[in-house]
View 1 (cartoon, rainbow, N blue to C red):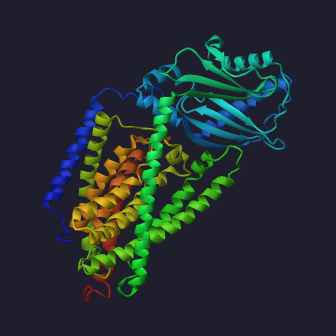
View 2: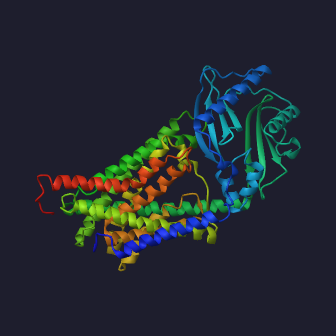
View 3: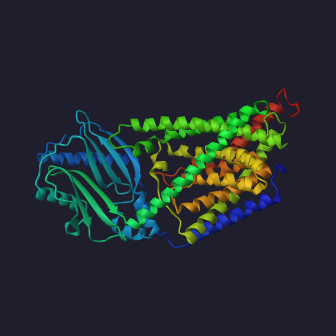
Length: 552
């Protein structure tokens, strides 16, 4: 490692990145509104608590009406238990974005069937065993769909009465009865009747409404779009490709971890087992906290009949995997550092080094400077991908901050990502491939490709563009590692993710409300950590009893 302080090339990169970022933001802000802009997104989204209140109020009103008409429904009493999750029609959103039909959809359907909505699970108060799943509009609080689980009486009803009741439910949702034709066989008893709207198709997609009856009472009302086979086939191919690249990344990551473990065991006399212990612990604690924080996401992904056990089991299993991943990170530290030391290079300063505090501060400054370039570069890659290759993305409820117990904790994952990925793919990965390959640039490229392949599972299409984008970023991180050392690459990665996630708290993007102060705190957290560690080191080694000890 040749230098540890900011130099002119790094300052030039930072300035370049800042100008690129500003230019791309200017292009977006001065252009026309994006095709996917939703007029309802301009209004503040309701909170989960408000969604739950709206669902319970609707259910009480409905059950009061059912009781009046003699249906024998069990009225909600007391305070029924509720669980609220964020949901999104991912395939529909993808079709609208890919075919540039979002504006048409918003005009015709956004008020009655939004792509994003809240799903409220309501358990009726004892002694009832029934449960309701009620979909709530995120801005108007309107009920856009519902389903009753359990307690069916299976009351008989004639086919004509069933269709009449179903059509009345469609009309109550704001549609014209004459616009729909039935596309399912008549139902003489409880069953699902399907209707297709002939008016206002969105491209080649048509609205389909499903109505399930219990007698003449509507126990389920669902809205969906039947998407063209060509799109669903294309999307499946994209997802299969992403799965393939993800498996390649997992196999590559696992193989490197096994090599690191083997090297640590076989060369244990030359390995410093204290290396990476603290950072591995930080990674493990943050990741386990994040898994617990994602309980609503796991619950939202389980069956509506589940009381939460499936989600808890998923968290237990993923935490077990997290501990295995933490072990892989630790051995990547021990083996990677030993491999570089074997070549006579010090890539990680030690606490006992007299200049440790100075070096960590310089690494932090270098990291932020490099982060500016990375942010600008990424924005350019996004712009090129969108304008040149038609790249688009959709919301994923499983990774949405709305499906977290405490969304404000999400930016802490910047540290888990920075620690694990820079350790595995730079500290260890470049060292391993440097011993196998003649050219250093290949030793940087190959682990960057493995790292990028693991990011293709995000709902960004076409998936190959994500592979290219993350690989390019990986090359920059590799450059930073080789030129400035591990800590600079770590701070660059952590600062970049902290800024991107902090911006979501500043703007409220993906959240019910913005929290600007917390967003700024996360952006500055890498700097604060570096300065605090440097201060502690100075306190210990300059003012302490070991001030004259020479670094080993």
